[in-house]
Length: 188
Image 1 (cartoon, rainbow, N blue to C red):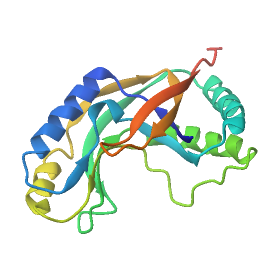
Image 2 (image 1 turned 180 degrees about the vertical axis):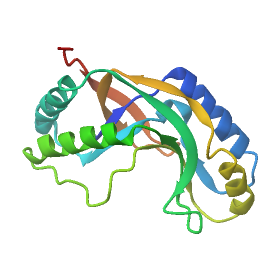
Image 3 (image 1 turned 135 degrees about the vertical axis):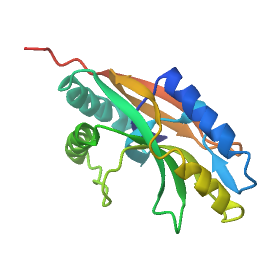
């Protein structure tokens, strides 16, 4: 099964981002938009994983999550990967990157014991909203997107990490949460 570890977002933030997507969809472009219910913060993409390895992943997630208290993130700004001259991914930004980088590092360390390779590229927490398929009509859309670079879309309270199964379908990926690891570090 195809799996990834993620943090979910609040319905309020999901609605705000969906309003942005609706606005951007008015441009005549060739972008595959992420369905609002599928927007999340990916901590670690695992790819195809055998059923036998899932219990180990759950234990690793629980260990990392239990070392953290619930925390708040601010969803702010927009941008593209890799850059505005060659955009491939449209995103909405996340603040408090240092805390997310720490969680990402801890997950990588725990999963390395299970044979999962750490990613080569730097971890850049974000919410993917669209994937560019061609440059048709892209300039006006990018100009519009830049207008949201300082916009706050809301706050998220992160109280758990989730393990998500992704099933690829012609109409887009379908996600199913198969495990929740609560952030439950005790306050001393």
